[in-house]
Amino acid sequence: MIDEVTAGAKVKLREKISDSVPVGSIAMVLYIDDLDNVFIEWVSNGRLTSFSKKNFKSLFEMAG
Image 1 (cartoon, one colour):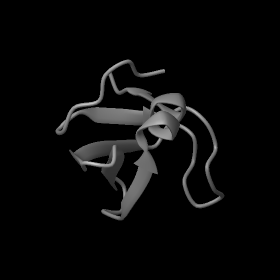
Image 2 (tube, rainbow, N blue to C red; image 1 turned 180 degrees about the horizontal axis):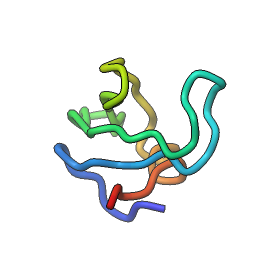
Image 3 (tube, rainbow, N blue to C red; image 1 turned 90 degrees about the horizontal axis):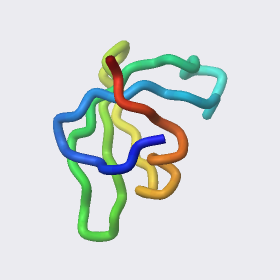
Image 4 (cartoon, one colour; image 1 turned 135 degrees about the vertical axis):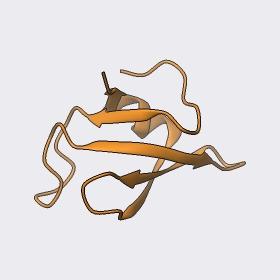
């Protein structure tokens, strides 16, 4: 679980969110909006995805 979220951080998916995104996938945090939505870009395919900050913190960990 992530305690703090910052733009530019590389993160790794800890839990399954869909069949098209395997656990362990790496993403970069692009930005966090005023409503605490976290926007990420998947390193593997460049797709953009957003999560609420609460969901993001429970689904991701910092990538090593």
